[in-house]
Length: 620
Image (tube, rainbow, N blue to C red):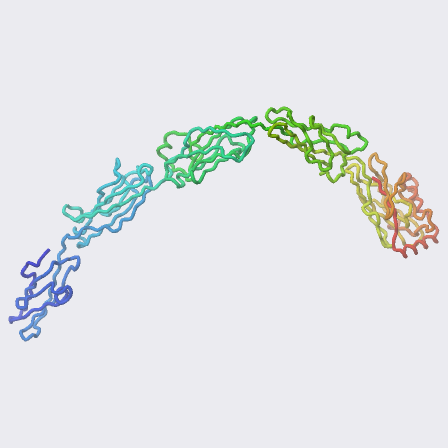
């Protein structure tokens, strides 16, 4: 209120009955704001020279001084001036941030809070603000928001917010002092509210049914693209599509994935399809979202549409398989044949098998084709170019290094005469039955031993398979054998060669076990065979019959080696050897006592050389 036109607003006066002179001190007089209040020197009347603003200063405390004529202070008088409030300030809204609310939020969901201030005196009607919504944009069939009059809190009115219909609202809010009474000061603010998305819309395929085609016997190609439609916010998990094949793809022939750029489903062929087996294919495809659907969806979900896995809608893809001339193929891919390596059979004149190709389209024998060899590492085969008859070029050898586990592999080609020419490849697996066509051989042909060595282990090998290999029959060949040796069974492929060079008369000690049983058990040879081989350091020869245990020194001046070997002390009577078959007759002979002069001579020779030469004969 303007008091400048008044004569005075206050008056100071001394109680002394004398003439006084008055002055004012304090803010608004002698201090800032200067001379706002001025006192008349002789009357003490205080005038105001400007309009007061309570919001700048609510009160002034001044000191009036009364002086005598001589200037001495007679009295000090306190003057307090309080500025009364007027409703001269409108409300002011503090910064208003943007607000967000999830669509379909229930009634009473807090959205935002507005706050306005008023510079007028607090706790009075001049500063008491009432809030109200003046306008909602865009206008809708209903007001979706309300605001609490005294607090400025904004809430959702009902659960009908739908981002797919309206995604953004603007509210004009009014703040009025005097608690909203008429005549009060007002201010307005705008609140922008974004409605955020939830996955409340089920994705759908652009079409309910798709048709396309593929060519048989091709793979790893794109078949078709399926477009998904979704009303939810783009490029969010509520919108991004996930495609699945739910029927018709039991063999995983097709795959489908989402194009990250276009959000389309890319249906791909991963395995070749045979027209003759599957001329058409029907796939059930379902589309859903990365995000799980919200429970209790409205709209499409309540419309009774068919839902697939993951809440998506199912569509059908009809695929026609186009026939492609396939040419010939070998069935089976690997044909097994059986032959024998028996050289007595006239196998080279025989057809060992026919391996013809089949027309993949008609399933009948291929026509207008010719046959040829592919890989044939040892040149075993010939193939008739017309009939596909297979013959051998050579007698098969099961011990050939070109066999793998007794089987020889070669490939046959089928070449079509059409344009373009097509080639099919098949594999022949020839399993070679074993024949006893290999003699056993000693593992070592020569053993250098010291003169006092009494035991030597002898083993043999045979390239033939069972039963044409082990067990072997071992014999000592008397020719060029020095020293007295005996054989003791060790295994089916070896024996223990035993001697004694002690220089005493030659005698055998009775063996400490049932000799007949042990010796006879290992007296075997290959079934139906009469092949024998002997080996020495410098010669290989065969004899008509095996000399099982001959005696040393036959036809030699050296004579017997003497004491022979002794096992634990037993009776030296070995007359039971007379009852054994012919192979052991000479073994009995070597047990006879020899002249002691020759063994002494041999012992000296053997100690001089340190080498004993023994011929061992092995049959399988």
